[in-house]
Image (cartoon, rainbow, N blue to C red; front, side, top):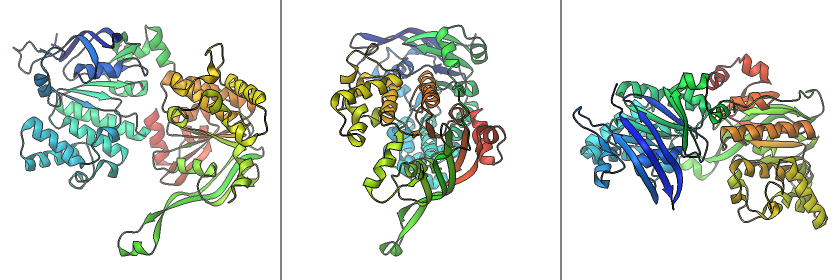
Length: 535
C-alpha cells in the first residue's frame, strides 16, 4: 500500500478544557482529493487549522504525521515538532486557502506583492525573481492580464479573481498538500464551478493532495475522490464518494444528502391582480468621470435596465444571477429604497417622494435579509426586535396587545416559550443561525405584509437549516397567501421556491418565464451555463 502523505490519528482539540474534536482518525494519500464535510460547528475547520497549529488557545493532542520527501524518511508529526520546524512546513509543503479572500488578503499590498512575498520568504528568491514568479503563478490560475492584475489591490479585483489570487499564493511554492477551507462559499454558482475546475487542473498538473473543507455536497460530488463526514466533532462516516452517496450508512450522512431543497408549492393563479408590477424599470448610480471632465459632471452606471415583471398574490418570482447582475438593486427598488425610472407599483400605488405617503406601502412590502446575525440588533431583545414594526405602523396599540401579536408572530415561525424559556427577553446571540432567520421572518410578518422581499435568505445557512427555512417559507405562503420576490444565485432554491423566474446579467433581464420554461428549457447561453453549473 502507498504510504499516506498525511496520517492523522487520535486528533483531539479542546478550548478551555471543553473538547470540540474527539479523537478522529483519517489519512490522505499522495495526489488524493479528500472532502471533509459537515455543518457549522461540526469541527471540520478546526481540524484543518489544528494540523498546522493555527488555532489560538487550543489544546491539541494526537498525531498528524506528514511523510518525508525521501523514502527513507519516517515523516514528521506536525503536532509535536517545534514551531521553527513547522514554519518550514507551512506554505512550502502544506498550504491553505481560506474561506473569504477579502479578509485573508492584505488590503494595503497588491496581490502580486503578496504572492511574491511567499516566494521570497520560502524559496529565498530575489525581489525581481519573486515578482516574475508571482506573475507566473497568477497566470497559472487563469487571471486575465496577469502582469497588470499583479499590481492591483484586492478591492480592485472581482470575487473570483480574489479567490484565484489566494490560490496562486497558496500554490506558489508547489506544496504537497493543499487545505482548502470552503474555497467557493463566497462565490456565485458559475464561479464556484470555475474554481473547482481550476483546483482540479492544478492538482493534476502538480500531483498535490487536497483536503477540501465544505458543507456543499454538490461540490463534493464534482471534486472529491473520498469523503469524510463530521458531526459534533466526531468522524461518523468515511469512504469513496460514489459509495457514500449511493448508500450512506450513518443517519447524519443521510440527513445531509437528503437536505436538497424540495418543491412543496401551491400553484396560485398567475392571472390575478398583481401585488407588485414593474415596467421598463431602470436604476442608475452616479460615478466619477476620469480626467478634468469629472470636475464639471458625473457619469452614470446603469445597474438595472428595462426590467418588467408582475407578481400575483400567493406566487413567488425568483430573480437569479451572479454578483453584479443587478438583482439586489432590483430588490432595493422594490423596497422603495433607491430612485428609479419607469413604472413600479405595489397594490396599485407607486413609491412617492414623501415618506408619509410611502408608510402605507412599506407595511405591504417587508424584507428578510441575507445574514440574520447582522440584520438583528444585538442590543434589542426578541420582543423589541419583532415588535418594532408595530411601534411604527400601529403606535396606538397597547403593550399587552402588542406582546400578544409578537408571541403569535413567533409561533408562526416555530418559536415558543416551551422551546425557549424567557424567549421574549432573550438576545439574538442566544440563537443559532436558523433560529435567527426565523426571528427575522417573524419581524417581517408581524405588520401583515402582502409581499416579502427575500434577499438570499438561506445562503448564510447550513444545508439542513436551509431546507427547514425554505419549508417554513413555503408553509407561510400556503397559509397566508404571501407573495415573494426571491433574490438568489442558487438554482436549487429557485426550483424549490419559485413559480416564475427572471434571469439577470449585467443589469439586463436575459430570460423570464415559468420555472419549467426557463430552467428546464433555457434559451439563453448564460441561463444554460447557470443551470449546468448547478446540475
